Image 1 (cartoon, rainbow, N blue to C red):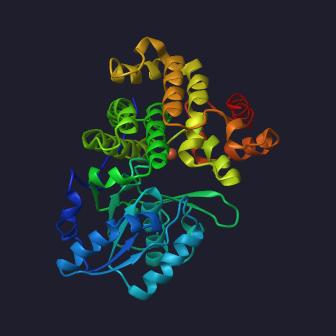
Image 2: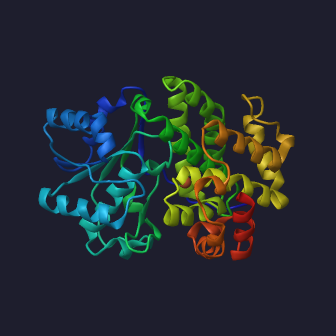
Length: 383
Ligand SMILES: [Fe+2]
């Protein structure tokens, strides 16, 4: 039995068209000046302008910062802080994928508490109250909208810093599945695989609790049965909604249980080779499941029980091996690579990457102990 202390910090507003409720979602928060944080791609699609228009109509003063980027770095955050210092916002809105939401959290840390991003690498290091924030995810991936952590890479060292503080949680998240219809196919693929990996890794994490398992299971049920549907039928709003909720529940599971070795293996691939996060996790996860399954086969069977009979999901009796094969099938189905050799990774980099993977924060939460040696073996299997 694992004791827990659970509190939902984020109000959730879900449904097609719910972006229209942004003014009423923001109304309980203190302030009239709203800075919207997004990336250039999402801005081009138009959602930040729509959100800003709705807020202006309701009497708010708004500004858009579109300098967030994929795998946000300290530079993206600093550029946003410059804009914030000039505009003096009272409320922040992160609108876009995980990078926009994490960038909003990063800007909030520095704008509210001073210093630089590195000062907040760790847990509960904020030194002041932070601005209230709203999240409007336009992808179904990281689940950042439900987390108090921002993942920001050091622009110089490329080290991914997990900066978490309860005060960096979003006051509300608007989950409008219609916003996810315009995602490019590759984004649907890599964010979907990432969300699936969150459901799987959180379910077996050392920190798992009754609460995190609740969210992992429901997340797995939704994601495993809807991922192929959104790949086949990108305009299927029902399936898009299930993916968006699944990703949010998985985010909540991460908040309450952390992740595992597949994420430790993925980070050095992204840092060194710019491998897209979902692609990197998609390659590493099946190997981690097989490895963990040598001791925790029952846990993976439990997860399969949730999805049994749903589409191509294998029966619970298939255990870790069946789950690993199912996951590889989904990665293939998404049009992504299943081997490191297909991604331009050099085998000669494995020893160094294994060292870096062992230093990742997530490694300590993997159910089976992973040191440099095990991680090196896992990389080698992934070639
Ligand atoms: Fe992830």
